[in-house]
Amino acid sequence: MSTTKKAKVLHNFNDAGTNKRYAAGETIDLTDGEFTNYAAAGLVEAASAAADTKADTKKA
Image 1 (spheres, rainbow, N blue to C red):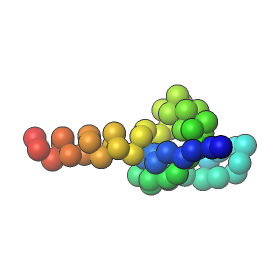
Image 2 (cartoon, one colour):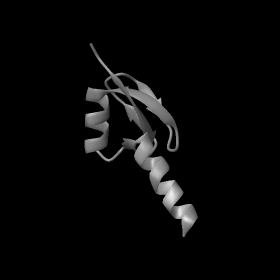
Image 3 (cartoon, helix red, strand yellow):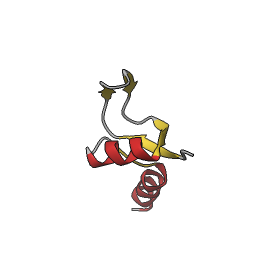
Image 4 (tube, rainbow, N blue to C red):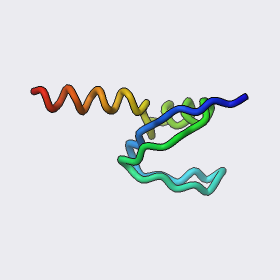
């Protein structure tokens, strides 16, 4: 059974294997495998981490 993760897209990119397009700033659902691959390439980060960073920025 595959689980999904919410991820924030950091850069516009196309997945050549699936022909899916992603735009920077989008929050998307990814399988664990997709998330691992995209995160390793620096294309996405966990959505909760993105929200935490934004909250910290607003406090400063």
